[in-house]
Length: 414
Image (cartoon, helix red, strand yellow):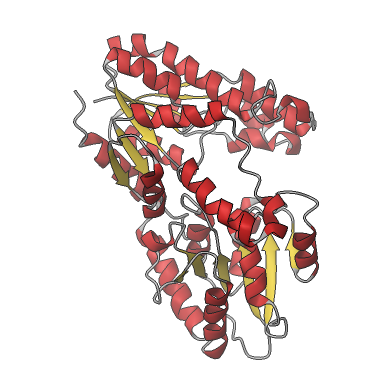
């Protein structure tokens, strides 16, 4: 069995799928936009601050013979974004928008399938918004179609978020993810209809597919891995200081941000809240007022985020709709106890009341109750934090890659 993996931009989860398939001799080819390997000129240029993105796209040297890349549209997107040429990256309309990147990449992969099948290809592994052309061609050629849905189904998102428009109208301007055209939403549904198997990273993502009106194949849940645990957290006594609470993510109501602000309202003498993340919109007055009351850091590098996590006592991620929530695993890997909701991967990776807490989405009272419990019994921070970090050590990214490879190897691919 040999599989093509198609992903235009390659994030941590897709890289570890590739790693697992490669290690188990299941990888036929990796198709992506940028393929930069150590020692190449582009890799060296990544040391220049303005070109740092290039080094972040670097891949394992051993993958080089298996990798094909075509970077014109992605390079255009990156340059247009750096130069603030917004009309070029405008949602669905811009010549170098992310939709164009995904669709051009998808068609390029599709055009390579016939030759690949002649050379032993068995199936394709593609991701939401970048799978339609690939799957249409794969079906014609009798190739297996493996689909990865990294975030919940769009109809469920709209149903759940519509409630937020009604409950919290002042925060509605931050709910920006509802501008997809009917054509784009139809492509998402077509991708699902062509899949022979669907992989998701959380039980919540699987549940959102209940809103899909067609027939679905088997849905497999394999949670993502944790970052490598490099150092133990030093836990400081809570006596004579405030509880340091942290949130990291886009400042949008989809992340449940208003419920966190409500939870700590009136607790400023006991709680110090730090918010790390960019605003979804610049002119939401209730968001701006809330940020004025707390410590706000618009942006940090990934390493700085991890360091920031180690400096805090508890991480709160009150998301209302999340396919996984990588910040949860990042915080746990740094020895931080996490409070998150039942609409994230929390229920799949946290044992409630032992190494973290799961609260109902959209409940500021539930968040406040946990914070109050911590203030009353601060020693649980170290207890829960150490348990969270121990769990992170048992499930590094390599475990995710191997589980994906094992699951794919068991598929009934002709």
